[in-house]
Image 1 (spheres, rainbow, N blue to C red):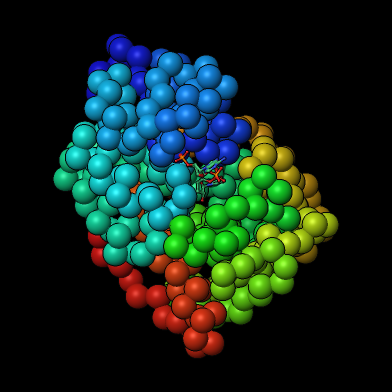
Image 2: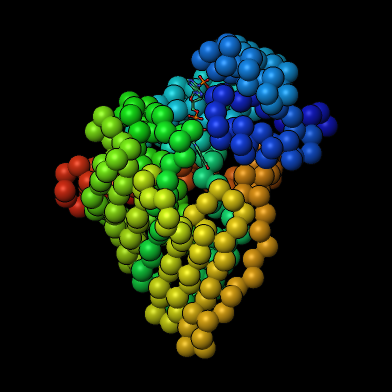
Length: 340
Ligand code: NDP
């Protein structure tokens, strides 16, 4: 891709995440423009384009992919559609930044990865938490031995799904709804990133307390065992109004406490606790989505890797699906190594 022309982004999906975070994150990159949006409804595409000052509005993905002004696509449709849309984008020679979960099945996600590799386009997964200054600092601390050998992690990611998002996540299993593919997949990705380890086993139990319908779950507690021995406890929900999010790591010589860090916002604090006492670790917050898009843009130019690669998307999805399976069967689920 040449560096001397502006790079045009096509949005596949007239979604909330595109409107609230990603259009701004793309526009924050010098030389990058949002040139078109595609929706399954022409009227919704037109309204979204007007609302967000986007020139092109298409009622189909095929029409957007045929637009020569589109160099790269950002896919943020419901989870069931990501697979076919990534394959279509790869066939059209477009780079792809795809929302998590990459697909509903690991095999589909691997097929997407292979299709993009074969087409010579970058495929990345929008796991935004890897871009948080807090999680990056935690990764650095753990790698630097600040807590000694890590033994346990605990993720607190029980939130209340805001009313405007109380749609397909709660009542459309076929769209990939449910808390595990929505939130647990982010927890897994964040733990893989900070620990530099892969999950090898999952157990869990779900809850369908009040919001979820059609057999979907709106809460889960799960445990993952990682290949470095760490046990991680995850608590995710759509139904909890007054809990704080957070993450903790407990090692042989110290603990890291992350408060208010499982979020889309550039906020939160990190505390290191050890034999010397408690220390607030300074972090320089920056917009998570803009940082993720910047890494993706560099990768398109052959400079480095995206924050979360397609491989990361496959691995984090595979572990989340293992949690789904473990919860359904009541049995521990082994997570086999994946070669890609
Ligand atoms: P939305 O519910 O806002 O949008 C999903 C789809 O719903 C859109 O593509 C749109 O279809 C359709 N839609 C939107 N409004 C309407 C309407 N009024 N009537 C009928 N259909 C409508 O989803 P989110 O933005 O919350 O999530 C989209 C994707 O992004 C998911 O894969 C999710 O997992 C991911 N996500 C990632 C986050 C992150 O931080 N990485 C955070 C939030 C979501 P169409 O495009 O055909 O118009």
